[in-house]
Image 1 (cartoon, one colour):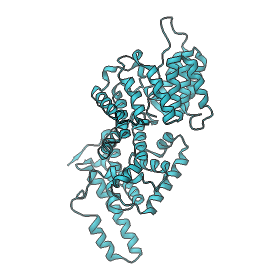
Image 2 (cartoon, helix red, strand yellow):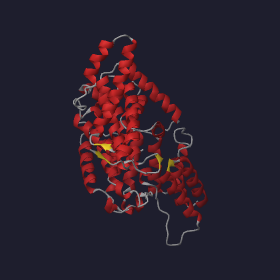
Image 3 (cartoon, rainbow, N blue to C red):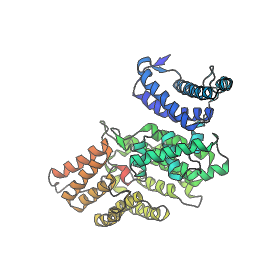
Image 4 (tube, helix red, strand yellow):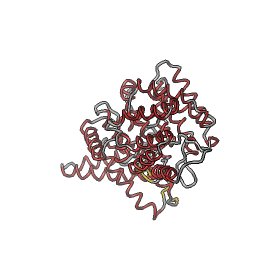
Length: 435
């Protein structure tokens, strides 16, 4: 029995990729070859499923195809070494012809997540590799997340895969002490996967729900493994409090809707309640970290029934604390926005100048977008138009590009009426913590 191919099928393939990779990598103990085999299985699915229909058991189909590819490869290698007897035995063990999911472990994706975050790898390499293997992000998307060129990221991922191949790392859930050692990298990976799902950096769609949902699911799994870790609870709270606004972020044509213009009745109150509960529990544990503070910012936004009710002084205080706890160019950018909302656009523009010499953000579209909004608030229409257009030219997200060009066109149409007031109308991910 098969199902018809549609757009949902493409999302299904992306969702199944890390699950299938986890099974094949565990079964054959060869991460690099397993990734190649899974990619071939995905290509076969894209070729065959549109004509033949989606199999009743798509994950099993993909595992079978990838395992067959791995078995063929092992047979070829062993044959060259004149070990035909061994390959026959190996095929019996690792590629059963009966139940192709007989050794399926529901936590394979989670194991893959921890394996890729092994301390033998540098932190940046581990995170990049995990985003590729577990998150299914493209090299370009990962490069955008790290604010580096795509070629640099491709080399980083290649080196990480080679390190995994030569290290002989066992495919298993690490012991409790090892989990704690890999915790920082694991949380950062989940953070970035969710971020790409919430606001896709490339392409025609603002959101990739498959990525956001998978990040939330995996974070719940990590919380079950580390139930007393306040930062894990803070990250899950951050994701839920941010994801709660998903339905209000785009219009009927997938156009981007800024936070101050969103219909807040569409926000998911159940997610907000759960997020606030998780955040409260995390904060009560004493130590306050990066994700808890960002979740607190998201909670302040979510608890305002109207945009004009937002407690910007509280948000400013949180970002000032964030700058001390975990300084980064994106935190500085968001701090400038909050300062502008509390002390006026001149203060925000002054703070933005400190980012002009930061190579990680100096030519990033978000810096130009924020500067354009603050210039508009300041009354500099020409400067705002110029930076809106520069930002639009630098982003690879079509919804963001359209939004920024629309802002520029609005200002070029002429002076606003006396009843119209300049308001801060950045997309919610611009001044929200997820970046």
